[in-house]
Image 1 (cartoon, rainbow, N blue to C red):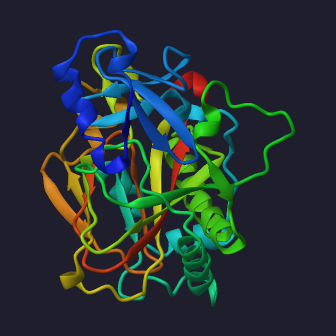
Image 2 (image 1 turned 180 degrees about the horizontal axis):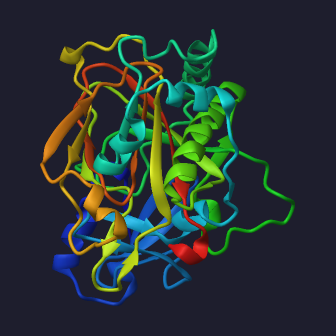
Length: 330
């Protein structure tokens, strides 16, 4: 048995080419949060113990361990609730509905990106994430290669779990801490924005149990990806994510020279996916860079938008939530 730290995670992909053994010697252990996973590169199995229950699979091409428990976001998801402040802010923007329909992307907040928030809310979220950072709650032990992403994350539980409630096999691997009040207030605003879009576009969105806080230190990045991919072999989506919403928790002014932009590859459509909305979409490829100014909000189609986080020279903080479909619709 060999122990692999997150920095050595790339060796799992190399091991796939070096062994086809089914014995114990082929297993690698990997720390994930407070848990230890066992990965068998030859069979691509991910288990809680050697030859134990399979809770995920190793994808050497994508360079990640995919936990089946990731779709626990959909189980326990609730109906979206309206938020008058969020709806009022959205209605102040011109052309927002056609923008999202055509590009699968909507950015809210310009030079005064934090002006629509109640006084002190952005500072409150900054303080809450600062406390979590200082206490070591954010971890780089996510399931992707260090060459794919180099941020640190923590999941935030949006509602208390009922006694005895279970998310299924491996569900507890997605450790979460209670969402602090200012972060929860921001999530309610994001939920309100999603509620308006859902009402106009009939997307079938639901709010998951958890959101995520992420910190990119100087030099950190995340390579190009979609938050939900279509598996051409099975014809199924990888998870239940339909819409991604991001709230940036930085200073309201973010200089372009600091990097860290969310680069959105608008017009790069996923292969082999057709739907009724295709006639509304832009046909040109338009890279759009969104700088993470504090208070700025980005909403995009999780299945459609190819995006990446460019290397940053400043600490970069964000709250993200993925609005999902009902489990049977994924």
